Image (cartoon, rainbow, N blue to C red; front, side, top):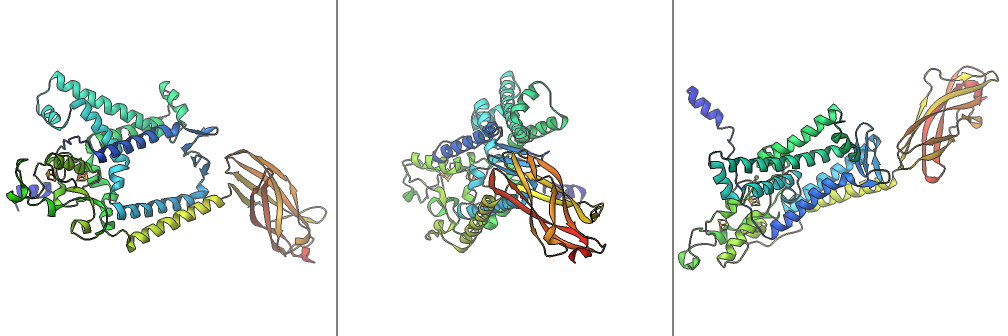
Length: 470
Ligand code: SF4
Ligand code: SF4
């Protein structure tokens, strides 16, 4: 193989991006989509400004390793809850994908949401599809420069708002804004802000469908979750073919044509630039723009709507729809079970943790009156939203050496602020005389004085010379 041929073969592995000039389209699905996208973007921008009590309601406090979500604070100790939530989310995604295809991609994914906002800014500043094509083909002029500048300014303002809000989920947003205005941000905050903003600028401004096509793992594996009864967007070839141009007055039956007039509008409105008439494709994000576009064409031709529509492969092939099927039931059951386990564990969770650390320097200490002392440090972690005063008590004691007479000495109360941890030193004492070490289990019990449900126990060992048993 010659060098030139080898080079050509290698180059073909990387497809050159062809600019997509998407045509805006109106219709039921696009209005629904716009309403959802605006609601989701609004939620994202507003949420960090909402307070719960004295703090930000949704705040991922990484330095303190606490995730606040309204009344609940997730600690590192709650990783099992977070894991369950993620597993439930995965099964939920499998369930909805098997049921309704890529609804998430078209109507909920942040990539789609912000790309659509960028497209709206593009449409507003540079015009619709044909105007943008002409603008790009024209040589540079003041008019072209001003329109491009307006577009990029709009994009950058959006990026700044989105990037700032993103950082605001990790740093208290009400402090962040005046600090940015005063130039009082740390280096890591500045880098975080720049990365979040610029990532969106290149993603929603330039990469767009390339992210869905090449970078999104969900796009890769969602095909495996589809079956013949998954609802997604289909072109109906039995009705549309043979396609062909014709005048509005031409009767399609006499012309031997199907309902597709070959206008290509469904391709022009597609944000990923695909032709839905070629069948379902992994590049289709399920935005339903082609449905609205084709319905408008059908209206103009006085044909029934729905040549492109939400349907299943089985329906398109003339079979009856089937809503209930084993895989969908399995995904639904797994989603429900994991979500229920998460809910039960969250409801039963006691926002209090106790760790008992024995004094590592000495196993025990024999005092002047013949008693044996063990020293412990109790680490009390108040994971609640309120401050509490806790009583420290000795719980169950094993049947080992001197167990009948072990007593707790030292602090019996501990005041711990909400979200704080406090270390309290306590001693256990028992009478003993000879040095042969034996061990007895002991339980420490910590209970909130103002809330009887806030109680935890933690076991440890009391070590003493063997003679205590006599
Ligand atoms: S918009 Fe409808 S009629 Fe036009 S090419 Fe697409 S499928 Fe055919
Ligand atoms: S084929 Fe239709 S639904 Fe799929 S991405 Fe293109 S316009 Fe959206």
